[in-house]
Image (cartoon, rainbow, N blue to C red; front, side):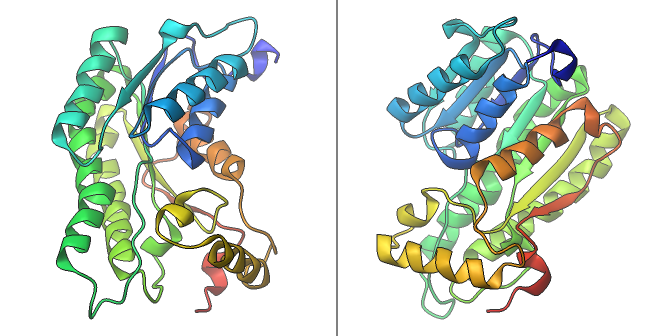
Length: 270
């Protein structure tokens, strides 16, 4: 990779939550590939995070390189304040700065609103909304120093209603509005805040939510029919957009809620 294509300084530090698989993993790898030199990657699965770490090291441009010590792993439940505090404290202790925060970690919940438990509501809001606010508040003082960037990974469910996913839609709508309000407050400090709203992306999240292999396959097939571009999205589709929004190439973009969904948001039939 030629140096002219680098988007990030090797001195920059990014925190990527939910990086053990899917969009978070792909984003960490993309940032490393684009020249960013130091990363804090977080998630619940330490073994999977170690795999992401090695992929980041391998993806880094040879003329820059990323060493083992350049990728920090912090494992734990992002909904636990102690985990968020560990992410912030260990990143600052090891690297001394934060330039990019990618709030990607999330949970997906299925169930009708008339019977879904209030405990399920609390859990979805805790992971998808509350943890984003808490971790961001911890990181903001450092982001102000570096004139950094925040990218929140939301969903088209934040702007469109879906049967059986009401709690998730509510949490992502909250995340979108948080993005817009925070962007206004952070702009005078030189900190940009944006969100990406993926449509149906081929990641493990659907199986983790309880769907069977057959149900996931059926979902993907139906999305190919409903989606104007006629395919399911890839992790790379989303990671490319996140990396762009986090980079100086998007220096005049803040407060945007950008769909990456193949046009699904435009038609959105049930």
